[in-house]
Amino acid sequence: MGDEARVTARYGDRASEGKALLETDELIFRGDFRLKIPLRQVSSVEAADGRLTVAFGDESAEFAIGPAAARWADKIRNPKTLLDKLGLKEGQQIDLVYVADEEFRSLLHERGIAFAEKARPGSDVVLFGAESAATLGRLAQLRDSIARDGTVWVVAPKGGREPREAEVLESGKRAGSSTSRSPASRTRTRRTSSSSRASSARRTRATGSGGAARRAPARRSPEP
Image 1 (cartoon, rainbow, N blue to C red):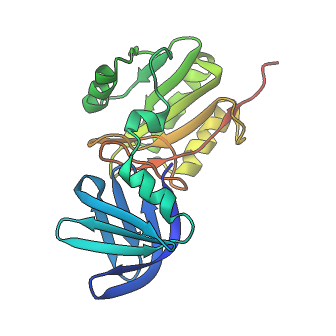
Image 2: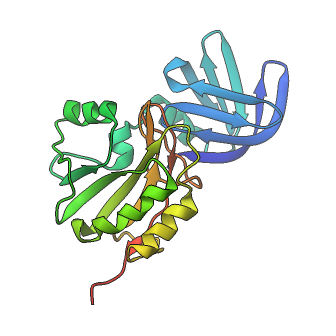
């Protein structure tokens, strides 16, 4: 759920074309050189003439992004929280299944969002812990627990390479979902907090308190 763009970056005496990614808690550039700027270290950000200038510590970097520069600057100044990224809010029926991330639980408690430690019928959001691709087979167990417009977030260890987006999609199909982009119920993969990543797959990245995210939307097949 992060933003990405092809840019020309300037940092110190270096300049390179490459890809910039704006995650929940960091700005990343990958080109002839690599740069990772934690958003908590950003002291100022300006957008002018399609260029994004970011100051952090005693340094600064410039990214020629184009018309999106102003939008990126606003997102850096006013970052969404992890819970906002996941679409979690008070009043929803939220279930955590096989999720061992205590930091994420603390975020929910701080926001006053109630949750259960098991899947319940009609859930708006289910966060499902997957330590590896092999554990995705358990997704089928959630089929009858998700509301028709609900969402499953697949939570995986931060820094791990599994599960991949294709594996999440395939598991969604086996669980009785179709790979539609409609707003109906869907399965996503994301990295959440410092110890885990939770949500959407590699194509779209979003970060949690210290992770990245992957999204793989999947829609449940209509009831017979």
